[in-house]
Length: 465
Ligand code: ASP
Ligand code: MG
Image 1 (cartoon, rainbow, N blue to C red):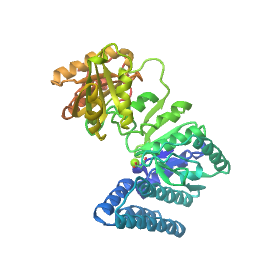
Image 2 (tube, rainbow, N blue to C red; image 1 turned 180 degrees about the horizontal axis):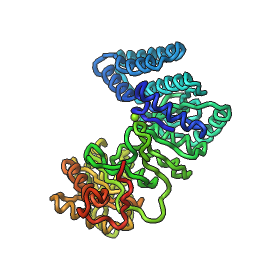
Image 3 (spheres, rainbow, N blue to C red; image 1 turned 90 degrees about the horizontal axis):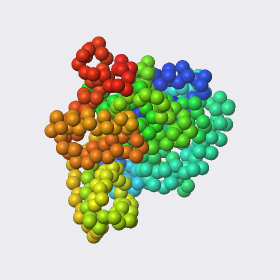
Image 4 (cartoon, rainbow, N blue to C red; image 1 turned 135 degrees about the horizontal axis):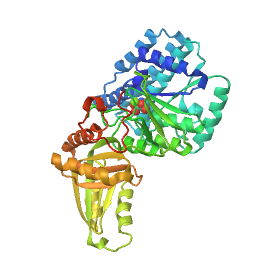
């Protein structure tokens, strides 16, 4: 059972979490927690203040935790432990403010305090409810990563180690409460698995100890058909495959860590995304590609801040090795490409705008004409690609009607996504228009009777939550 930041944000949320855990205690859960509320953001802000202004303050961070400890009436031992962690965090920040130096390694060490605090507080509270809970830092149950601070990858031995340490713990009736998001490298330095990495911690643990299910407890009713900030009537999706969930996570739906699906995909463990604020809602079930009829469209997402690179060369005609040459430049410069489309003489691809692209003109222009265009967005439709002609026909109809020029199209090799590049400023409108078009047909017939033809394959099921 993984609980995200908002599901452990304060005393009230921890009480709700405890209820959910107690209700399932006979299934011998393992808990994985994020930092409480916005702690990770607060720590990063404190680090920036220390380095930029030489200013050290952790009041807001202390406040969240101390208030919770007080509300839950937790014992003196826990209070001492938490004070020590605050002292260490404050000292680290003071060091940064004096040296005006902040490395990736120190940043990871700083943010790790969020998860280290939350598991201690939660475990202490669960103990006060007479549960045999034990707070554990992930490295104590076997998490070892490489030293790629901020974006570390777990090393293979992690799996065996987790399996054996958790076996021992659960056999002795312990309820493990483990820090998500963090690990240690071989030299004992604390690392992080990328923002939102607690999901990955949870799926790795589940896969390693062959759990029956992973529950990801969040503050929304599951994976939604679109970003609710853009689309008011976005609705929870009942079921998605691992592949669809991975595409959704990557292309803009802030639901799950993009790499979190991999461990479950390998082992076939289902993932249930649930709302801790509304546990009755069915949530979204993520599992192996479901056989039989899938709906035409599952969800529509968008990813902003995308740069489009057009590489045109007549030398590409009939040549072998041209693409290899182009992509080796990307690889040399450590840039990962999101979407690709090629013709006989051109390659178009997209990059996250966060990448430095100065090298493109320098390195690629040597053998091709290159044009770089910023301020683009990727709009992605996750759906049944066996019916891609229907999806494309209807989606382009929407684009035409809304006067939106599609600048690149790509149908993902994972066979679940169709993506378009449009201007950044048009993306929100396009998502709304596409959602209205595709999902109007799935809305409860009672309200919109006769308004739209139902899709052949669309289930009118997941409309009630
Ligand atoms: N606390 C970390 C973050 O906010 C990890 C997580 O929540 O999964 O990114
Ligand atoms: Mg979080």
